[in-house]
Length: 614
Image (cartoon, rainbow, N blue to C red):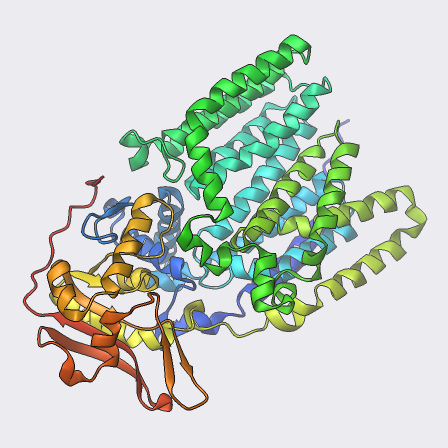
C-alpha cells in the first residue's frame, strides 16, 4: 500500500510566522515612500525602474530597451534586461484590472514586500534539503525575516531589481540541491536549469550562478560520482531552451551584440558552455584522458569570453574611477573605517565580524562533504561570502551564508548528541538574539529618509517645476548625475548622465557632465548648444564655526554653480531665465537649488527609441 504523504504543517507554520515578521519589518519604512499624496519609489535606481514599468503599464507595446532620453543626445541601450521591468508591469496591470488601485505606483511599491514570502519559502526549502530540523529551520527563517539586509531588499518601495536577484540566488541553490540529491529525476534537473536560465532576465550578471553548480559537479565527477547522462541532457536542453526564451525578446540579442552587460549572445554562449561541460562530465570517466579532454574543451570554450570576463571582474573589484567613490561599491570593511564599526554591526549583525571564520567553516565542511550533494551549499556560500566581502551592495549573494552554515553545524552536533538537542537549540537561539541585537534595536526601526535620499525632499519641488516646463517645451537638462533618474521619472526632458555606471558610454557621459559643470555660464552657451535647462545643486552644505557656509560640489572648480547658483541674481547672464529655486531659511536663506531655462534654445532632436548610436 502507498503511504499517504503528510502535509508539513510545522513547516507551513514556520513559513507563516517568519513571513509575517518579514512583511512587518519590510513595511516599517512606509513614511519614506510617501510624499504628500504621492507614492514614491525608494532608492535612486528605483525611480528609473518605476518610469519604465509605469510607461509599460500604460502601453505594453511601448516597452523600450533603448532610451533616447538618457545619455542625450545619443541615447542609450539599457543595461538592465527586459525581464524584470516587463514582469513587474504585467503584475501591476493585473492588479489594476481587478481593482486593487488605479495608481500603478501604489501597487508597485508593495510588490517587493509581497515577494519576501517567496524568499522565506526558498530559504526553508534549502534548510530542509540540508536536513535541518524544524526548530533549527525556524531559527534560519527568523534570521532571514529580521535581517536588515532583507529589509533593504524587500522594503516598501524598494523596486530595484536586487530583491529579485536574491530570490534567484536562493532558487538556484534550492534547485541545484534538489537535483544533486535526486540526480536520476529529470524534473529536478529541468527545475534547476530553468532557475539558472531565467536569472539573467533580471540581472545580466546572474550568469555567475551557474559557477557553483559547475564546480560542485566537477568535484563530484573527480570522485567518480557522475550525473546520469539522461538527467544531464535534460538539464542542458532545459538551460539552453530557457536562456533562448529570455533572449529572443532582447534587443541586444536581436542586434547581434556579445557583451556581459546587456542580455546578448554572450549569455547564450555561457549557457552553451555550461550545458556542454555538464554533459561531458556525465559521459566521460575521470581518467587521465577524460580529465585532459574536459580541461582542454573548457579552456577552448573560455577563449571567446576572456575580454568580457575581465570587464566583469573590474566591475566587481570596483576599479573604475567613478565606482570607487560610491559607498555601496566599497568592501564592508572599508566602509567600517569610514563610517564606523557600529554601522556595519547594525547592518549585518555581529556575524559580519566572523566572516573569515565562517568562510573557514565552509571550506572545512566542503572538504568533509566533498562527495555529498551538500557540497553545492558550501561552494555557493563561499562564493556569496566572497562577493559580500568585495562590495557592500552584493550582500544579497552572501547574506544567508552569514548564519546558515552555523545552523547546519548546530544540526550536525545535535544529530551526534541528540540528548543535548533542546539545550543546544535554546542556546543557539539566545546566541542569535545577541548577535542580531544591534539591527533589532537600531537598524530595523531607524527612520529612512524620504525615497532613501537625504536630498530628495528639498529637490522634489523644483522637479515639479521642471516637469511642467518640459511638458510644454522638452529639451536636454544639464544636472548632476545623481539627479538623472529623478528627472527622467518626473519629466519628459532628456538627461546627459545618470547613475548608470557600467559601459564606456556611461563613464563618458558622466565626464561630459563634469566638464560642463566646470564651465562659466558664458562658456556653456557656446560649448553646449544642446542644453536647454540647467539644474544646479550642491551635494552638501556645511556651516563653519564662523557661521559661513561651505558648499560641496561634484567638481573641484564649480564655475557654473558659482555663476548661476551662488552669485547674485543681477550678475546672471540674461540668456538664463530662472524658473525656480530652493533656499534654506534656517541657513541665512542660502540657495540650495536653482533651475534655469536657456533662452533661445529649440528642443534638441534625439534619435528615436530603438536606434542605437555607437
